[in-house]
Amino acid sequence: MADMSTTLAGAALPNPVMTASGCAANGQELHRFLPVSELGAFVTKTVMRDPRSGRPTPRMAETASGMLNSIGLQGPGIDAFCAKDLPWLAEQGARVLVSVAGTTAEEFGEVVQRLVASPAWECVIGVEANISCPNVANRGLVFACDPGSSERVVQIVRTRVPEGVPVFAKLTPDVTDIVAIADAALGAGADGLTMINTLLGIVIDTDLLRPQLAGVTGGLSGPAVRPVAVRAIWQVVAAMRAGTLPVAPVIGVGGVRTGADALELVAAGASAVQVGTATFNDPDAPRRVLTELEAELDRHGLARFADAVGIAHERMVRL
Amino acid sequence: MSSGVVQVAGEVVANRRVGAYQQLTLLAPGVAGLARPGQFVALAVGGPTSANLLRRCFSIHRVEEAGSDGGTVDVVVAAHGPGTRWLTALGPHDAVDVVAPLGQPFPLPAEPVACVLVGGGYGSAPLFWLAEALRERGCHVEMVLGAASADRLYGVAHARDVADGVSVTTDDGSAGTRGRVSDVLGEVVERTSSVVVYACGPMAMLRAVTEVSAAYGAVAHVAVEESMACGIGVCMTCVMPVTGDDGVTRMVRSCVEGPVFRGDRVRWDAFDGGVCRVPDDAVGAPRAGGH
Image (cartoon, rainbow over all chains, first blue to last red; front, side):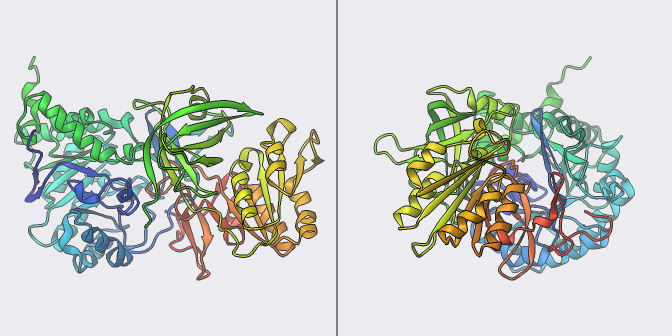
């Protein structure tokens, strides 16, 4: 059996499989199927400063090997999160990666400030700055579409998270040059990157001949987007290996349903993998993906998970 | 949170046509002993490599606890999309991944009061074992079943076995009284002095049932049919505005807080034209510009 441990900018995890933000609520529902402490880390639903109702319904449309969602960051707000959700996760022994967002860079800072003050802060192994959620009324608010905005948010988050706890910037693939955004985030102090968030899409209801989602646009996720995730990870990690981008750990996310899917992201350079939409199909998916990934590593004779990270860059046939 | 839910590798025992619908009996060890009327199952469709990832949710029609094989659960399915077509084409021994039981059941009255159970189309599916549970408590049970046409009714004969009285309506008059269930409900509530109405069916019907029940002094408990991606409370797609005991409206998950709600707590004013907006007074409602 391969050694599955992984280290993300100082955060040591027993295994590399996590939930994905917005795909596992804040743990209690999934815990009925899968103890949250068995995960490498539990990734929370993105928390903002104030309670938020989210968008109107329908919020969901099934697509080929995926789905479109337009939840709109529904959540209880940071105070309720710190009072209820985080202490519950701490009690279960979960390692928690907290996903945070704000409508302004300053709001990101406020959320982090209150998070750090929580008595349950000890269970937090990292903070994921969600600068790439597409479900906002103003697309201009997708910070990760612009290097300057990404920089400002990451800077303020990094300043307010204590030293030793890594900050990850979650990026969107809906940009011309993801390496430039990665460079801005790392330059502003991000310790690592999470790639990818959903892709912006629209589904038309062919009976009603109108957009199926009440919010018109939504984020595309599921196995259909996996090649996009692999490509984004590949490009960023290739730039790191070429010395044109600072070296930092990447958390891969996008369309992982099986251990072989996870291995794709890992071979492209991800040091950990999040399982998102697949959890809707199979509540046990994160645990199953870990078991299957272990079997994949054994099949390849790899003694350590770490040996598989980025391996495809070495094995690529150079023409 | 209660952990009274299981994920099991289910197996089709029987799949038979009932009117315009298919009734599936699934071997699903552990579900029967946990389930209560009003709860639902979430079924994966298309097998492990399916391109249809979202779970399909169905009210539980009946359960049977059994010793050696672990028990069965029945659901009623109408084939209208790729997932339901896959399910209705299954044969004996085919595998189906089952997550159940999910959601809140119909609350049962403490006293042996008179009740009316209202079903629209195959929305009547969960009402038969509810009727049995109510009659075991000494309740007088009447059922009102309605549909667009006679072939879309579900379980009229079954209703006569489990209820003290049955009324039927169809939009086109092909069976029973021409009209909607809400057209005859008031008379049934009044005649039976019912204080509780249970209903399952389309949103517009549930709204009408809630209004008629209130007008005749009965409380309506309605099981909603919201589209869900997961059924277990993690995806946040099945939310709807419901007012809590504190008088505050929140966008709540119909899979976890529902699917059964008190009809007078549902913000029907938010539903219009196939869309449900967020009421301005809901917790965290968007300010100008939206979310």
